[in-house]
Image 1 (cartoon, rainbow, N blue to C red):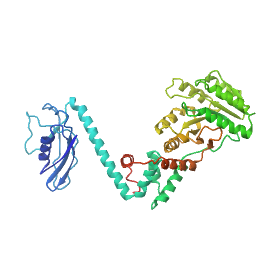
Image 2 (cartoon, rainbow, N blue to C red):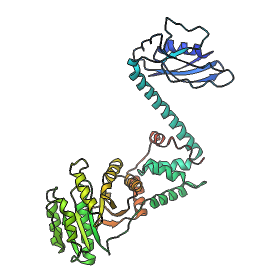
Image 3 (cartoon, one colour):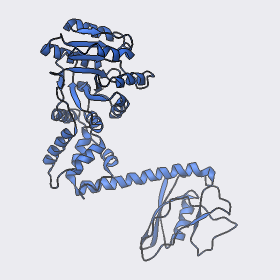
Image 4 (cartoon, helix red, strand yellow):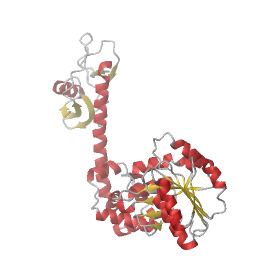
Length: 412
């Protein structure tokens, strides 16, 4: 790609010069009035072959002449095509531009996309530079929220609500308090009243370990007489044996349904237990049995609460997909595991906030039951900030321009 600037006394001569320098595939980007006449910016991919001429009957698009009394208008970004020999344009008439033949459409389309991307990048750079000049505190806050891994839309929302005249220290306190308020939590909701909980989630996120931690916490406080464990994961080798061993250790009742579809009928037999914990198969989102299992959970939604177990070391986009795919199970809350393995927490917090799914517990290790705590919002936000500092997270200028180049209206 080569981009040139052509200056001439008028538009016709400028376009003629562009065609001579770049050939027939030149694309007009912009024009403006200058003391010398008119300045036209154009570009072309010199590796492309020249565009063949259209037949004389092709429709033409005529560019308006440049007015001496006003700035020149932005010219259409279409290929510059030489006039047909059979019907030359009069010397004094504006230059006629005609559509490229169908065979060149793909190349022209790709060229225009490339040019549009370049222009959008330049505009984003200008907008971000303007924001950092006008509102340096807002810009620095957006940088720090990006460094903790927060999603762009949430960072923008917080920055837009920042009170006028805030210094950076106040802006940080405001942002972290707002972030904590956006994240719903449940508290230790099953510690006293119990319930019927099905731990659901993708493969390997720690469902069985989380079930064991909650079971041991209950047994230490309430005893195991009113605790029942359901080993419904017949997919992973050894999963049911783990639940049986846990039940034997605690002295709790253990039930093993032969098929997952038997779960609704089994639950009717467990109504006398105050706390029922159900281990479900780890779900691959592409597993053909995934939808059937969700349908079973949905059918007994009135008898149980689904707890969606999420791993904090999962990418934000993958968390968004998990949350979306498990919606048919109507999860009542989430449990966030593997905080000790996560390099950033902003993506996990962003996904939960967008889904407005309350967070019940967080887990940051394998110890049972020590490494399980009720979720507290300010603790999570503080940990997200600490992780960013420990890992020396940084957001370069190019990333910030691309993310926030369109928010230059903040504070205006």
